[in-house]
Length: 192
Image 1 (cartoon, one colour):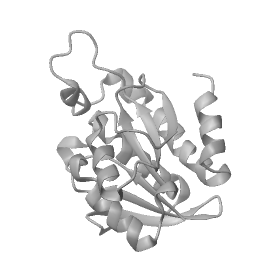
Image 2 (tube, one colour; image 1 turned 180 degrees about the vertical axis):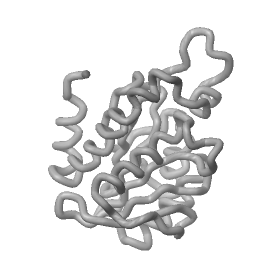
Image 3 (cartoon, rainbow, N blue to C red; image 1 turned 90 degrees about the horizontal axis):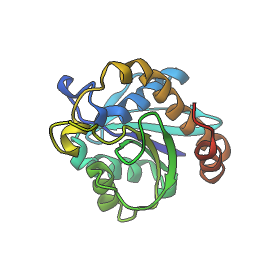
């Protein structure tokens, strides 16, 4: 069994924020595979289905990004999913826009959602689906936090469905061939 987590912030005001790309990926996984609607539990929204012969629980924490671990840890404990079978989709400032990369373990790179999950699980050893949102462009007024909480621009919106689809496919690949092989495949793909 896998626990697939999409990170974001709840509320309509955050729907189109770069920080919410994990929610978009979770929604796409659910839509693509025809899983039931999300239900409330674990301080989040969750559903379950089958992916490449594996049972998968899909979770969107509703705790706000900084407290994501308080949703992920209880869900992982309830379904008895070990950290190495947890897959977390999130925005990544350190990757250029449109890049999708898989990474097992490591630090939080300033992402407070990842930081909270590491703290709550007591380990960094879970898989991340890193969706590149890029650094703020020259002339952007504000900090990195302002950038991730700002909305996708027109060009990004036009490309967003393709990026989200690639991230959802990366998750499918993890279920299909396992994390190590999926990392090798997804991370070495030529850029479009």
